Image (cartoon, rainbow, N blue to C red; front, side, top):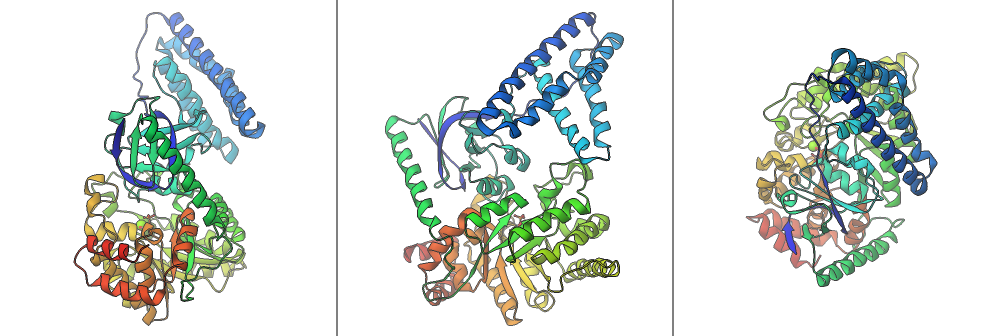
Length: 570
Ligand code: PEP
Ligand code: MG
């Protein structure tokens, strides 16, 4: 038995056998061969193996998830036997005397680029299918030992060096019971997605890849941030009980779904959810969210090979607004950069991507991208209660420029006769220290603030939110951070503005009493944190928390603040 410590990234306890997720190296050099016949045989053998695999996956998917979900594998099977593709590969092997893998790779690249340039969205999506199928055959031709994460069909714990947000999005909740990674922090975007998928996760362990082999029994304790490998019978039993206890607790919390959020002394605060896609609204409603406090629109731009069109965006925003039925929806404009890359924009690699050309900085330069998004948002505004906010605002001038572009697009749309809501509130993320310090000036010009502590903490403490080696400096309870939060809230309230928080701190049980005391109006968090937060707030008196927060502000260290909060028994 071995216990590995890490960062608790998504709550819950998962027990299953280990599945190591390693991305193989697919780079293929041009190599000549003497015997093309031999290559043709290798190609046929690899195609046959891939076909066998796909048939098995298709059948399993049909049985477990239904025929509709299995259709994708039918299209993959068709690609595998597509004469146009296979003839092109065989011709190349025979005429150029190259390896089967090189011939396949080259031929499929041509088809992929052809699909990617098609007008129809349906055909463009075929490029992704072609890529998947090619990889599947290449794995056999290259003799790689690799299983595609989307093929996982038994209950596992995924073990990885790191997971990109798109890896995480592909994980099938039914089979992937939990995951643990070597790198990453609580606010890395794969951790944030794990919370919305409700998969227990422990990140930043540094050593799971070195210590865990495929098939080991693994416990992911996403409550305490621990990973246990090959537990003794006794420990396994303890954790099974813990898991069941947590599931019972979840059932208890579910009873608060329709109950309004109120402190013990009757003060209402709004509990909102952070979402990444329109599908996430289901989780918001199931968990009794009163609003969407942050819609991270960048996920709409990821996992595709070109910018989403105005209509694609319009449909996504409209769906979210309609499904929220008039409850507030704060949509954040594109915040690409940092750990969220957009390969098709082809931006140069930067030394410090978190301090670089990202978010509103990029939008103000690439106005084509920004204006398209603003138009889509304005057009969607009549379908619900839309609020727009700009990310990474560092200066008043940036806000004014972004606002001017919004107004320009609005005027154009009005001139075109398009109906637009007249009550769209316009706000900013406060996630850069300069903006927090100057909040009194900003408060005169914006309708609301949303404090993005994920970045505000990293920039204030100069500690990369993704780097587990400096995770000790990532201190939400540091009095320096609490003072900044207080400055922002006080400045907004003096101008009659409301203040939300959409960083992960808003859903943190130790921070909630302090934030309530500091006067935060809206708490926006992972949907799964809403009900525990509602239950906690009902047990807290706002008047008492004001005193607690005042004490915390005067303390010296984060540890002292944690002690102080612990003493109130929450
Ligand atoms: C933040 O920085 O706190 C935030 C909510 O935005 P993101 O995590 O997407 O950077
Ligand atoms: Mg941010």
